[in-house]
Image (tube, rainbow, N blue to C red; front, side, top):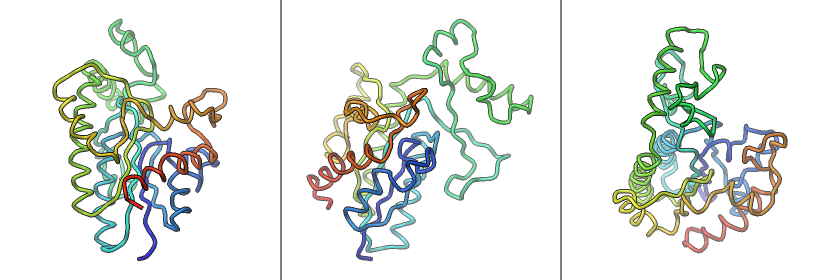
Length: 260
């Protein structure tokens, strides 16, 4: 095929279903317009980094198998490290590549750590899926509080860096072009051997934006684009922000890294 496939994966920041204004107007769409390409957007509202990586691995291998010679450009935007996955055998999969994984986020509260240590709930009951099932709720609460107690941004970042090193090696094996960045803005960490080791290796690759210093949401805010969530801003932006981000950041980086 002569036209490129622009593969997009991430969370609600790049999802076409979060707000009607984003239908067909995500940054991947503007890249596709510029390159006369086709978009496959697998971003999901509430996605986790693990799910973004896992489905991306499946999708790029699958696309390469059915389109052996097509140019494929993967645009991957990561999300909050508080999110992970749980396995729900009782739920029908949304799609084969999603399998029985469901995103799990142990809180939406900024003061969750203080609340946890003071024996207060770190999430509202309405955030518990299938809360009408007492047994499920019991173990969901235990699991959630345990995840919160043992949560470490260092552990999450180390695992993400390690996964990214392996993911980019896979992209190179299957001849997949890519740009990788953070959708949300990640916490800046202090010195730690394993995180520093993986980070140093990872950032030799100019196709990977610094995950601690650069984020799509941060860039939009710095450039004064209006948030779609007017009453409670959540970092979701409309077509103008996505188009400008594609034209000013992503396309120039694709050119600078000789991928287009």
